[in-house]
Structure formats: C-alpha cells, structure tokens
Length: 46
Image (cartoon, rainbow, N blue to C red; front, top):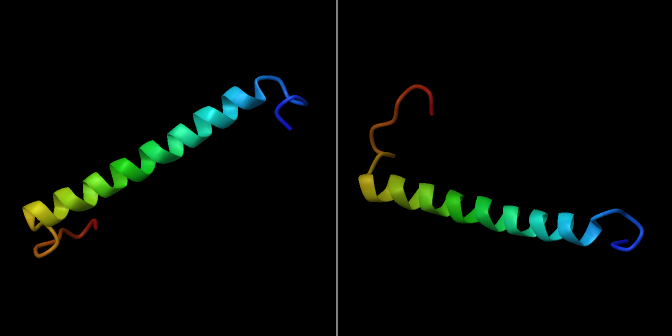
C-alpha cells in the first residue's frame, strides 16, 4: 500500500502521530476538568 501511493508512508506516519496527539489532548482535558472539579457545576453548553 505504501509503495503504491505517493507519500503513503509519510501520510500514514502523520496519521498515527495525529491520533496519538488527539488522545493525549483528550486525556489532558478530562484530567483538567477533574482537577478543577468543573463537572460539578456545569454550564448549559456542556
């Protein structure tokens, strides 16, 4: 697959790194909410 498409290996590597970054940022966001106890008093927008 990587040899058949142009920049296939590079695009795959960027995709893997991007998914890792999204998971890390999601976990940091959840931990920040727990640390600030922002889940107790929530706004109407979520």
